[in-house]
Length: 109
Length: 124
Image (cartoon, rainbow over the protein chains, first blue to last red):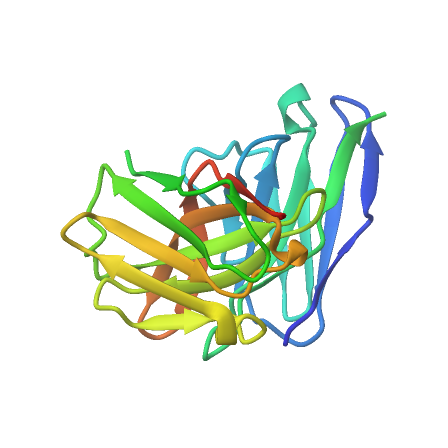
């Protein structure tokens, strides 16, 4: 099983600042990585797939990078609606064994 | 706009079978480009993939749950369903259904969109 580790667990950021979230895979997943945003009481929302492609309707302040085992989600200028939990997910297995990271909570500083 | 909606009992007794249905609207479940999946999230914890199904009935399950999970599809109703047997308190979670992007070469990919989720509590 590919284990996904996210850091930090909690990130305190002021509105307007830049946030950088990390996701590490226990073995290479190539670029087969997605990022999701989850707000309290809501379902996750797809932000990024293919490590760096924004999903439809996702603002340009969200960007993804990385390949292999190290990935980054950057929010260039945090807006109030961006405070949430963010999860990464790998989809590199065949047969599939899709796994998620433990999440990073982005909170208001 | 594609929408998914979970339905089923919110309370299940230990050792019994959890049964949920996901109804897809705004699009066909019989698309060749997608699988349909179940993901769960215990209260205050992270996400766990349970399994996914194609409109043809082809399934993939999380090996850690495989012995207890059955996912089925009813294309006539545009629905797919989850059965999880022999449940314990550890199966208490919000259960989400979602569409999984699928490509012949790369297989199952990301999930989008998701249903709103339904909380299932296992308790006597």
